[in-house]
Amino acid sequence: MIILLPLIGLLLFSGSIYRRFSMSAYDPAHDQRKLDSLLNALALPLPAPAKPFKFNPNTLPLDSLVLAGFDPSLAARIASYRQHGGTFRRREDLLKMYGMDSLLYHRIESFVNLPGVRQVSGPSQRGLASKKPSTQSPPFDLNIADSAALESVYGIGGVLARRIVQFRDKLGGFVSFEQLREVYHLDSLAIVQLRKRSFIAPNFQPKKIAVNLASVIELGRHPYIKFKLANALVTYRLQHGNFRHPEDLLQVALMKPENLQRLLPYLTLE
Image (tube, rainbow, N blue to C red; front, side):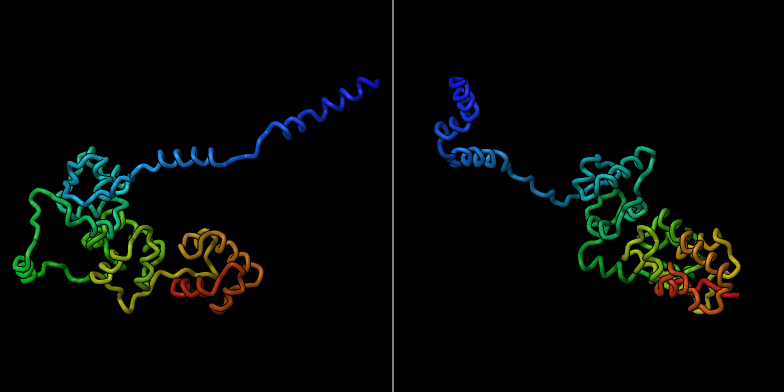
């Protein structure tokens, strides 16, 4: 026991004793030099941003479309459109592609080079062009316009035209141009052009919903109501009776004042 006990103690504390007397103080200089060399190796020069260049969207390869300023998904759609026989005959045809924003189009418009497209340059040609008689069609009623009329507006293609018509039909008609901002992917520049080319009749009456008679499904179809609010409105109506005044709708917990203001043109309390 006299021999074993000191040996056990020596074995238990041998690790800490070894580290204390055998390891020197840590010097970070060596590791710092290694880190510096790694950083220098990784500090590769970044590629310079691509400069704008003239291109033909009918022939430019997919990777070059990205370099021309199109995002990869839009470039892929353009390539797919061409593979299926699509052709861009005018610069404005690019606006018909889903995902093409008017801001992007204005940035690249001057670099689009299509055979047969006349490019106006120089003050004399611009002056002559400005003297040509305007062939723009007269303003149209936004609430009765079809997709063809909407597509005639600069910045609106077939997809956006259909979205505007579908949203208008679900809404019951536009009472303000501000409602166009609620159309998915309709950018502000296209809305500005639409304001110039169309109008909302002063005496226009939108399609109304009888809030005291409509079912949950009928109410829920309206873009400003949806199913949860429709269910709450019908439940409150069954428990407390018909709504007598527009302000009564605020008794429903889900109905906010700002939402009620949007809804008022489309509701009737009959």
